Length: 449
View 1 (cartoon, rainbow, N blue to C red):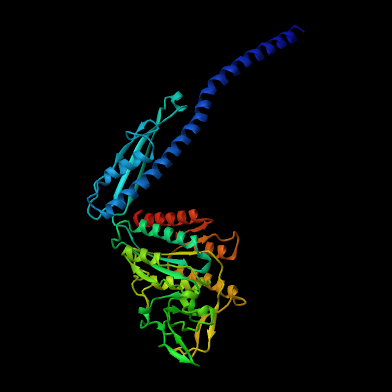
View 2 (view 1 turned 60 degrees about the vertical axis):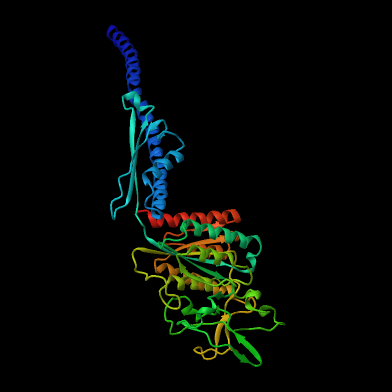
């Protein structure tokens, strides 16, 4: 028994000693465990700082490049330093109490604007093991001159836009033009305007252009049919393309008859065709802003008409030929499509109007909301969108006060692409924000790399 008793006593003493050893070991291990946990916190602060610096530097470089593109005597280094100081919220070129090291080399001929920013991020926990700071460095660059832009604004001028809505559209789209053309136009950015309702008005001066089928004004059954600049549609298949203009786009021949509501006294006042005509691509800001200011709201909605003419303006195919070819690597083509409602018109053949190349028929749009109008126009809208994007055209779309989940909202969401975005503007303030964001996105596309 003496041996057993001694064994039990030994075991008890050993257990006591082991508990003390465990405590010592645990205490020793707590230091690296705490340091490891703290490292996660310190590393997270470093990552956040790097992200904030990168965002601020990208914006600073774009701001400097924008000013330098307009005036190459601008001290872009000062612009970057002042922008960072202002937007990081601390004076004396510091951030989170640490000095900022800003390096902006001179722009060499044919080179780019490049900037780097470095700073230290002090550690709180890793300092326990002798690691006092992370060094963070970010870099940003902008292309001198940048890519050129060809932008067409396809804007809803229908009756539902009356009142404050058309005024908000004018203000918002003008703001976008001001962002893209701050100095009135430099040749790097060209903008076009396509107002649309049931028809699109291409302007009376376009009557003799190739790719169009616009007969002389004529009499039919005692009624005079006249052309006011309004355009009808080609066949369903051709309406979705920018090709085969041997089959031209027909003019919409309209008549004046005071007792007929929709034509009295002109198609502009009836709202069938916008009074504001298409403005071809131009780098003259005043031309575009004047056209925007002349927009009025009246009539019904046929989105395929506006979208197809926006595409034609960007194209170098007749009847508008100002746009460069699609394979030009230094030019980005952009459509900005905005509407506030569903398609309420569809294509309809007019058999009572003469036309030189359409066997006596003119494809127009229905006088009233035709049965199945949306069922015809919506798939055509989607098809045009897909064909436009296949040409690498960037598409931005804006739904203005459109019901959530509606057919037109879904169409616009699907239509946006190639770097463009969909915007859901529930009010006039959000409409302005959408156009501003598009303007800044386009500047970034033009200048950044």
